[in-house]
Image (cartoon, rainbow over all chains, first blue to last red; front, side):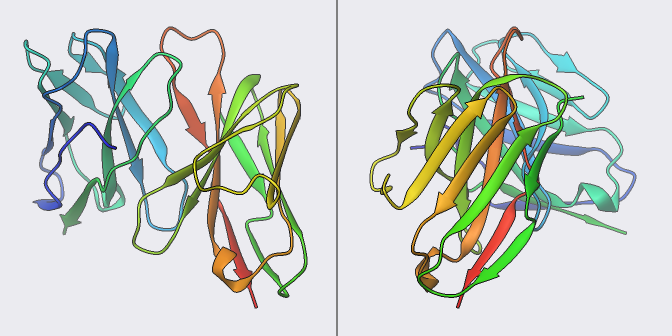
Length: 109
Length: 117
């Protein structure tokens, strides 16, 4: 069972920031928050992960609340190619990834 | 870096035949590989975990004699769907976990679309 809850869908305008929320209220101390995305008919793509500090890479930023019960993935300047299903996954070291339904992000021109 | 390939990308076969799908980590060594299946408009479901040099661990409800997994090297795992039937038609995706990184991160292949007639 997925340990996260995400809204089913959201949209944003091209060029604007996309903020994708995720709740993981039962996360335990040694579990990481991972984000993957899946563009239609492709394999999932790793985006970012974090434990408790905010993280940033060339793709996105991950903001984790102080109590670690929720997080937000930020795509700073969304493009049409960012349209995909985004999965927020809580995972401990050496354990398996369990994919929920994810959130479908639609970027509109 | 961290590229995973799959071959073939799509395959059509007759009912009763066997199909082999290859998963390769191209630029890193993967001690563990995973096989997933995804039906239309559904999420990925883990089928099995494959460790190099040992037997695969199958998820509940996945028939190990039907879905044969071999992980003979640190860069290659294969999934063979034996005696395929139309209900086995699906999108099969592998992933590889890179060793030696601070946290466990899986890199996914592009997937193989199987259609059984």
